[in-house]
Image 1 (cartoon, helix red, strand yellow):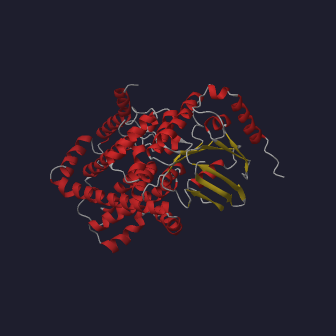
Image 2 (spheres, each protein chain N blue to C red; image 1 turned 30 degrees about the vertical axis):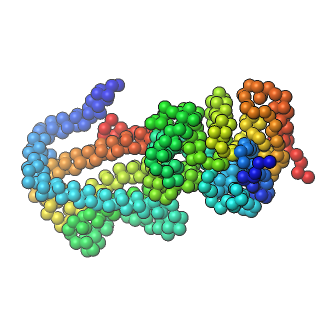
Image 3 (tube, chains in turn cyan, red; image 1 turned 90 degrees about the vertical axis):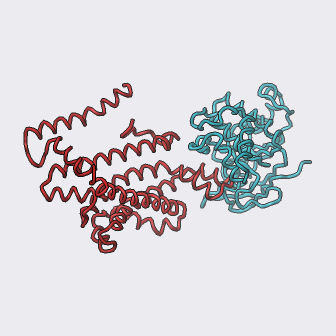
Length: 256
Length: 258
């Protein structure tokens, strides 16, 4: 059994009177892709932001490699949902990818080499000198992914990363996840509201209830690797898992 | 419309007004409204030659010093007020008060405190620039998208990089717009400050000309100030084009230079 990397224990987050997340517990093992799904407004992003150290929990805890998260920990990278707002329009594509690397202490030459390699890995080898606004949405999100993997994180957090691109681009971007995870030895936590995407990409799925979010079920996804947009999605097991998650999200089990 | 045709079209109204003035002035022979030839002669006499070093340069020097000090201090203060809630609560009401307080009413106080030399003139220019830039930089810093501050936090980007590569460029549309408005204010206050106890400077010469019934020279002063204002505005259009417009953060105004 692989070792636990992320341990979320009885995580609760309240905004004033409103309780968004209620005693959510799950773990993520090294090398896994774990999706967090749930109806919109369920607090999925809140959970991810607490794991990223961007938000303090009201109670409960998150540990990464046994170390409690109190602020953004070293060794994690985040891909945000809104690429158009999370890329810096005044920097070139290369500048966007090198900024965190320079902040991490890499020399200019090392940062540039690492960034160039990461851009090539997401299929953007030629766009380094462009500004993000000159690129399509899908390409901008590739820049955001390149920025994350160039950082060489052990844990990659993705917040609905493919929600605002068209269907074809979405499939292309989804198919980057496993190769990049293997190549860069990462663990991935992915927030999504797309159930097909969760089943297709995950080793396990954490299904949350509507707010206040509780864990309805944690589902093992035993689909074979490598996964393919056509073959995997035609498997009977894919359909079964899809239905299982969908039933949970649409008609949450009665907590009583 | 082509670029050249567009420029030509923009010139139609100013050119028409100038021609109309010349015709009217030539016909009226009113000493308050000298013809263009007289204004041009007075312009050369007053501002080119020895007048340039004696009057134009000191004015520009005060303007530059006051403006730069005001902008740098305003941006610096705005960063602090925009990012530190405690400071914002303490200083924002005062800044808002000072912003609306016309610098004219402070002129006597400035004379008492700083005398009638360059220090006073630079001081009042700083005042007129500082609060405009301060208040807008503060607003710009507070309006930085949380997506960007999240990126800064998640990737543990240090304070210096975070300020210069993330926060300030994000607030740039506010800062550039304020700096542009502040420049007009600074020119105005420069002239105003030279109308108190000064022998040198564009404002002093212009006011003196009016008191000496030298209306050609007074008009030459107005023309010079208008030209300066136009040049500064054009310079700002260029600054905007290579920063916030290029980054796609605001649409180009095309004012001055298009």
